Image (cartoon, rainbow, N blue to C red):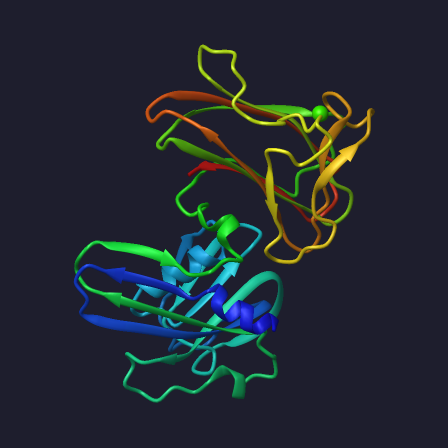
Length: 301
Ligand SMILES: [Ca+2]
């Protein structure tokens, strides 16, 4: 069942106004496995930054030579390879690395050898990607539902990027200015801390020069998720929730406690905005320093 869901998860169609060639990639996914090209015959790889695995997959899809990718969840590095592991190199165990490799590429004339028959590892899922390509401009349509919660992060601005942050004795306030590019702006936060937890409280969005709070329940002091949406696309344990604790809250009685373990979870809210207008975004964050950990804040649409 899970594989079935994941099969559709990555089913991404990039359609174009004028269709010429169709490129399809059938990818096998390996969690905590890194592809290393060890043979002198390897082609050089391309490294790009991707906000998430899906963005990395799309980068591979639109690169007509890409047949293998590795995505490092700890630093968002997406490495694209021309080769596949069964040709050159090998697969090694490496935490936080996802490797996806083509087991079918209909544009290639040479017969392909599937990685599943040449490796001792068991792939976790199979991904089907297809694209039509031409020289015209592209639009992207995603048919997935599970990744809806993070799909808009592609192209979003990263306000904060903390990795393995040390223990803090108290809250730190972060504040940013952002010029809206759409009438509904989305503020997204993602957290991971495998031991201990992040504490988040007193989020605020205000149009510069005004005092009107644009977030709903930014201090969590309704004691509920009111105004907020969350998702846990990687089925992490200990994902975030609204916690009652007078001592550990920054304001009132409640705060967001997040100890997402093994992968990040997401918390987000949309607010009304006017294109071209400047907004101040602020929040209080406190990390207990458990490792590994990450905290990321994105603003987009
Ligand atoms: Ca609070």
